Length: 201
Image 1 (cartoon, rainbow, N blue to C red):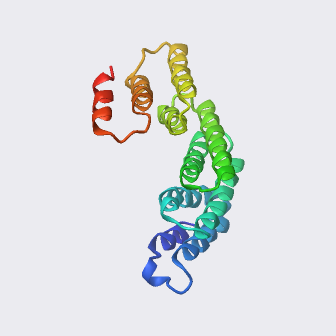
Image 2 (cartoon, rainbow, N blue to C red; image 1 turned 45 degrees about the vertical axis):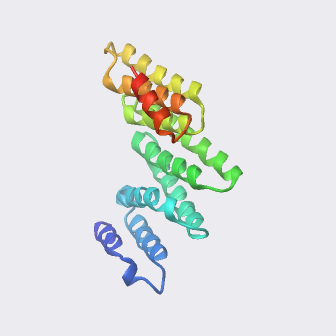
């Protein structure tokens, strides 16, 4: 499997003009995933992480083809190791990125819901993973769901309280992210953004 992953990482566009760069990469990583199942998570990690990077720049049908493979293999990895928080979080990021670039309203809703569920499942499995809370907050802010975002920050606060730990920098970062997003409301106006930054406590 390690040699297959290496071969996957070495595939370049210039070497694969006839077959297609993306198709060659998928074919090679699937070989790595299927060759030795006990080490398939390593290969799946490459597939999911690269898909997160590639998806925003892909056009149809390549985008859908890649997502179908990545979604399926990401879920297969979760099915094999359902209690590993990082698998849920990683696939959640891919669904979130897919929701941001999709042009189909039904797919946007579906991807957003999947990302939300995966992030929440990840938090249940790893309640101390502040980055996952932040990712879920970012998703809610992206879709203008500020009350939900605040609830997630509150959930992290409750976790800290439950283990008798003082509020940390991650909690205050979450609050700042929410305040900034709510203040700017996705505007690109420099003066509005500057004012919002100055008002963050």
